[in-house]
Length: 580
Image (cartoon, rainbow, N blue to C red; front, top):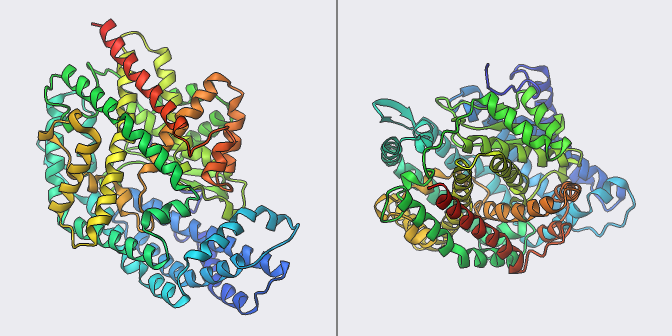
């Protein structure tokens, strides 16, 4: 069977009449918005017209852009997709000043209306009002918008191109970087080690241009955030996410307190694997004992359906639809972007998911993770277009809730010999989203701090990453086999408009763990969970959590989640003793 996704529900191809019509509609929006600006007023009708134009700009711009982005994600050198993306990006850039003008106008108004549309957009209008405090002058914004495709966006494009086309000899074969990285889960330690060393060698061939890309992106993010009136990119990220600094500090300080627990877990596990100086990076994903789990894509889908059906019918039905309608692109192929992602396509009530499937339990969990993003999109697909954007901290809630479902279900059904392996895989994943993310967060903070002093060459970035890894994982890692190129591995550093897309994963892991514990205690809680997901686009982070009775600004919640992980680590060690 062909386990590639189908994009036909979006458009058949670039000659599709629907694509051409949508492109024409989007192109005309520039003049429509310009005309509106000439006559906009404080009247209810004018407010509604402005909102409708913003809806249309967001909706059609997203449709057109995501189609080409999805094509390019699995075929990085698709010339037509690159060309169309350039056209759309140019149109979007020309619209930015108009959008800002309309948003500034709407945000400046005190609107008292019982109109259904305006009431639906109360939170959106409130956010526009807050945004006024951090908005550049029109002339400044116009310059930035015009330069965007040739500055931030071009640096990001270069990253995708270089990482998707990079290749190196490994195991006697010419392999893409993604294919080499996928060997990190290989059952043979010698293969994992060789793959790791060749992965580092592959990064060496692209490190210098990517150091320029990272410097340019981070320097511009820092400059723009300060020009807009933010303290720094972190302050901007928090305010745009409608998340309080107290929440971030409560979470991160709690994580810092528990880092020694994770370090001890890794160190003890490393000894079980025969390492006496901590865990070498090539074994960071290795399991205690040989992992016999291997799943075809068909088996992966059947397992996920079985476990989701036990939890909730709406989650099961959406997943059934995703598999039947080819929402997912599974295989790792040449020119395909690394990693995995999900894009919600609300206008057709679907999503598209990309992964590089390699038949492991972790790959099954990754598919379930991305289906969580799809389910989050499913919960908000009936919202108005401008109410479909959930903030980054809450973006990983449903995805990691799904991870808890898969791991828990596997564990409950496993025999005694496999239980420690499943726990090991889950705990290793938690080390990634807590300890590795802590390192990535620390690294990004150090980049922004040091980049003001001068250019950071590849060797400088390597050193900053090594310092961050040592702080996060300490004695848990073997210093002879660290991974200095994590700044290339992680695509998030190269997203043009977003800084600090790292700690949301820790937030998602600990927040979803707390929610899943509530579900285990009371399965009727799933209704509250659905309400929480629906509210995530029209409430602050703290208000959304309050639906589940959680105060995120206090350390109690975060420490409870971390303590549950500590208990699981002890359970893992106890199981090892039982299976000796």
